Length: 285
Image (spheres, rainbow, N blue to C red):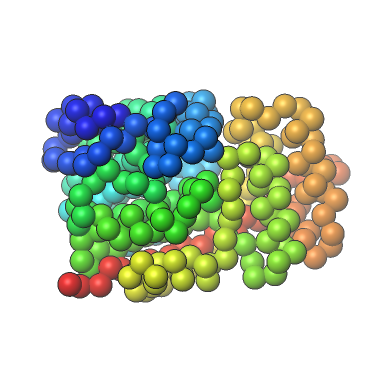
């Protein structure tokens, strides 16, 4: 999407989002021309029809992130996917919401699904907006796909106004290295676009380094239906799905216990995916 394309999208919305540089993503350049980013955008684009029905579409965590943005007048949802968080912001009363994603198809899906939301194709590590454009930014269950997540936090700080809120959620790993390595291994085996899930303390450090004050952190374990989780990745063949299932089923006892891996009729049925919700605020000028 060029600046001219973005302006055309903006005219369909009810406010002006000024795009400061070329935000082209699909099949061309991102912040660093990364093949990984292009592959990730393509992968999610291919699954765009499935994501509106995924388990991302609802949950107390979604409502919590939206509630943290209460009172905002302009909000940006980074790596919006199918637009569930952008839609939740609009439903919560934020009058102007931008849904940004690296995938053209995901942006189209979010705009089609949530009337009034403005869509922009954008790299999370090079947001195409001027400084201090928004008074709230959200990013939900996406940052584990970012090659340079610390840069994305810096970008959020840049586009936020003073006293603006950053409502963030992502998969996280425990402090135990063995448990953390297991979860990242399983995630990458299931989805090659997975880069890394980090410790909550790492996200705290990155946010504080970007100038944020961390106001609150909550943890939850979301129950993942393994069959639906595997089916959402259209590129996985039968053997790859079986390999992921074996990895979960044959995990050592401490891993089975920590991630609460459950079985039904001898097959892996579900597990608990740890997530952190972090509310951070940009200080006043």
